[in-house]
Amino acid sequence: MKLSTKISLFLATSGLFLLSAAPALAHNELIETAPAGGESVQAGLIPITLSFSEEPLDLGFGEGNLIAIADAATGEQLGAACAEIVGTELTTTVDIAKSGEYKILYKTASDDGHIATGDFLITVVNDTNYQTETPGNLCVDANGTVISPTDQEPLSVKQSSVGALEGLFIGIGFIVLGSVVSAILITRKQKREDYKRYE
Image (cartoon, rainbow, N blue to C red):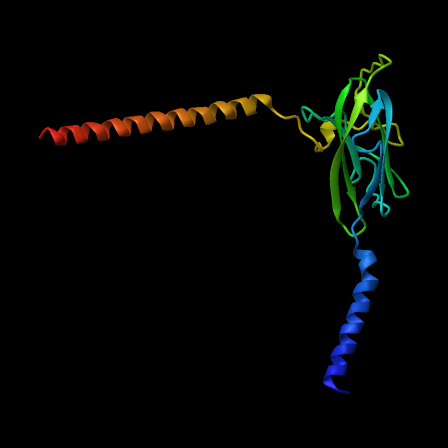
């Protein structure tokens, strides 16, 4: 058999192997969300459903496959993160009363070990004066155990407005300090030039 023929057969066999292995190595992708990103929903118990290209890897309730909701303005996560696996979907229910923009965050594990994360925004309107004492995700396992946010690493962390303000003041301080130092150096240089001129 000629060398060129052997090379052609090898490449063809390798290509078929890669094509057959591709589906097994594919990562899980988010296909659809309900509510859709940017959609407005009424305050109350809001079902959240995320549809994926493949069934997520079941790591146990509150572990690996998570959905959380956070205040879009502050980043503060409301309640714990959790989700039920139903076929290729992750589902949960969030309890929201306050009107405003919210971020839905998710984290999911594939059977190839890949971890996918993402988020999208929804808007909540309250035309019914709905009230709740426990805003956020409702995370209760099959045994009735409530998952606490303190038992998890949050998917979203509240932004510190004080820290941002301090950063602004520090930046202004550096600018002012730089201006003062420049002015002093220019003044000294001018004095030296004047001194040399009158020597």
